[in-house]
Length: 507
Ligand SMILES: NC(=O)C[C@H](N)C(=O)O
Image 1: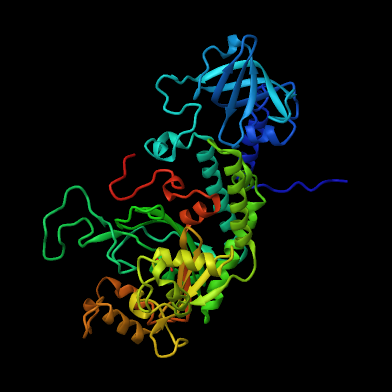
Image 2: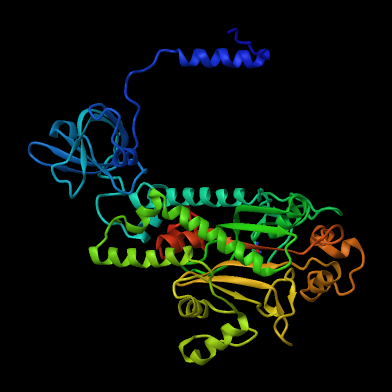
């Protein structure tokens, strides 16, 4: 039978020709390097001809042979390589190597199932053990924080990098499955979304001369690093319905706690055409369940739950595993408790003497209060606290009519034990006049603002209420806090690769 030849456009023919040329170019017959994770998980295609690139984590010399522990960041667990003392001569912790050899069952299967009998060794990058700060011993988180440029080479910190990457893959998958559009809102902004005055200003090193139109600054007027992408996401949600972003966020808070950073990542989503806050809360639940289930079924998730970390004592490690299982099971469970702020205050009041700050209707919940609520109400599940007093919340939240005579807004925080708040969200005030009144009350526009100029830097945001404004809501999730909670890392400074906090931004 005669095959009909498709007529190809010249540029397609060119592309095909060059791809054939690529495939017929002479091949190298050295086996492709395998990652340590691949080798540990799957029998290699040719066990007698295995190549691995990696770094020496430690080396142990005996008379007749030497053992190297080799890692490449793909696995918390290293592989064991068996070398001759001659081969091992110039190796020390940190040396980058390419090893070839055969992958053989280990005589000590309790420690490792297989080991690499090294035949060929290339030193790709030497490391002077006398000066290399990472050694084969336990390094405290405080010490490692002083060398963030090297810290991710430790097995556990490189595992955290992979954990973050896998988490991003999971949330991307979740939002794609729900037809959300991922967007990139700006980092440089002209307003303080939360109105808490915790903004960093942006300016060039040298300021120009002030004129009638400009104060001499690069953008003609003060600009800031974003404290939340929410306002811009609201604009974008009006175009495509549902949007999300995972963006850097900046807060000039002087809190030196294990939960605060000056630069962190916030995952924010905004949904248009949503009438009920319950729907936004369910979205948060579904997203976190999806994320946690995906991580639970991933290699890196299991490494964090059950893997051995440097400095581990058996008892402490098994306690940690149990606690992490509890946290993950809580995140994967259905129907998380939802209580109002007013109910939370009534739960706290009888225990006032336990707290440094007396819980009182009208005041914000302190971390100690959130911790109490999360551990007593949740029983391992995250807890939503809703409908906070209007007076302690930002201007953009929709007033709620559900809480009697007390003025509250349709907002929620999601609390987990230890880390406390990880998500904050709300329904947004979508009506023009009430938004203007709220902005007046918060001092964002003058009491009798009438002209466009009076509306200041948020004029564009007010504009969104003029044309096709519909009920909508959204949330922001502290991504680093979540990862800290799931990995059982008590200080967020270990979760972020190059952490910045008050007084610290060194490399
Ligand atoms: N997108 C959000 O709802 C987050 C909120 N603007 C906050 O910073 O807490």
